[in-house]
Amino acid sequence: MIAQPKASHFIDGRHVEDAAGAPIDVIFPATGEVIARVHEATPAVIERALASAARAQKEWARVKPVERARILRRAADLIRDRNQELSELETLDTGKPIQETTVADAASGADALEYFAGLAPTVTGETMPLGRDFVYTVREPLGVCVGIGAWNYPTQIACWKGAPALAFGNAMIFKPSETTPLSALKVAEILHEAGLPAGLYNVVQGRGAVGAVLVSDPRVAKVSLTGSVPTGRKVYALAAEGIRHVTMELGGKSPLIIFDDANLENAVGGALMANFYSSGQVCSNGTRVFVQKGIKDRFLARLKERTEAIRLGDPRDPDTQMGPLVSAAQLDKVLGYIEAGKREGARLVTGGHRAGPNSGWFIAPTVFADVTDEMVIAREEIFGPVMAVLDFEHEEDVVRRANATEFGLSAGVFTGDLARGHRVVAALEAGTCWINAYNLTPVETPFGGSKQSGVGRENSKAAIEHYTQVKSVYVNLGDVDAPY
Ligand code: NAD
Image (cartoon, rainbow, N blue to C red; front, side, top):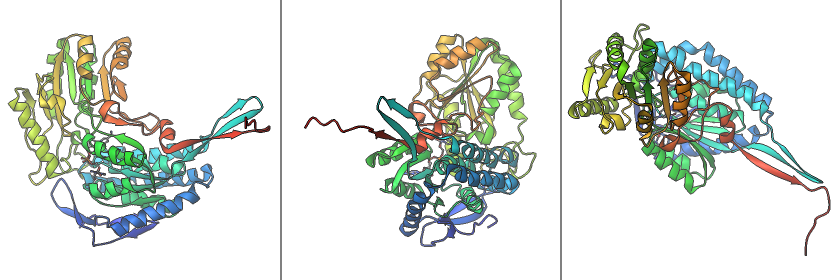
């Protein structure tokens, strides 16, 4: 087992094992090899995580923000120093090519730690003068926060949730996806090596049931989930029982609109980035590519050429551009959608079959053209390398069709006319929009969904709202005016 961690969990500053928990095999998606085995958290492990977080958070809330920041900043540096090692682990855990993990995963986790370290000491309250009296406000931490992760960006998600929580004085208990449990343990180790007091960043392993126990505990003030819409519904409902704060980062079926006047190479490059990065397993992907009639033939011809040049292979090889899907279940699900696309009459431009080394869960990057709005592949999130190209003629019409979905995570527009670019994104129902770009999510930018794609925003100054609460203090400088 080439990636076996020291123990399954990291709690109260220590590695913790309890082999009584159900085993979870961690599989390298490119070969099917079992690379590690962890155990689900037992009730005793969950209790240790909750008790230590509740205890540690009280102390942490009293630490000066600039001191909290120093620790996070140190952790960011350690992550960058160890980028290669962390990227190799991420590649084993997820199957994503090392070409991607070395630039996108630990690196963006470090960015979040550095950004929120900078932001922590800037958080202040307000004063409201009221003549003789006044009110001042204080931004306080929420308390113990629970983070629940998806499997596509395990290191990034562990940091995007942990960094703002810790920066503003909270504790974080993080439950990684059961499919990719390894990287969050490394994040916890590094945070503690950087000086984080024990108990403030605990990692517990488990499937959904472990997440549900955490979300239901009265000591928990907030839950931040990254996952699918159906899971979001369940976790939101559980959190509501205890009137807990929530951030929901859920799925999408985002539109990417390409107008006739777009730069062809950029539009094709944008569509490729919007569909094939991480083997298409990206929540914000622009999987409904609406292409205007005048550019359609040239667009499809160039798209086919560039798609067919993508190098699939062992994700550990630095020349590999696309790895496998994360699991056998995901492979089956995506193949099912490809069959649905063929059955419903979409035209297969390229791909549509398994590829790469036999033992892995690879699918050739796939493009369907002549897709119509009612087809399943145009309505449901596939979460694999499957692009659906739809035709359009008029701006108003494409905006209406782009918005005709229950999702609202992201959207993109490619056009040579910037006025049109702004006009169209103004009308699109999505949390993040790009003009002449796609899938860029720097930490300075709020990220999150509208409609069923989520609630709340991660990253940026917007995260202050989601990891703190306001206390108002009325100060009376005179006598009490009581009518009794
Ligand atoms: P998932 O919904 O199956 O699982 C997400 C997490 O929720 C896992 O850790 C799982 O164990 C946990 N979980 C499941 N049931 C639970 C319950 N009842 N209570 C508490 N926790 C529970 O999602 P996935 O398959 O791991 O990830 C893919 C999905 O995540 C896609 O829909 C994708 O769009 C979405 N996603 C969204 C974002 C975003 O930022 N908006 C980012 C990445 C992925």
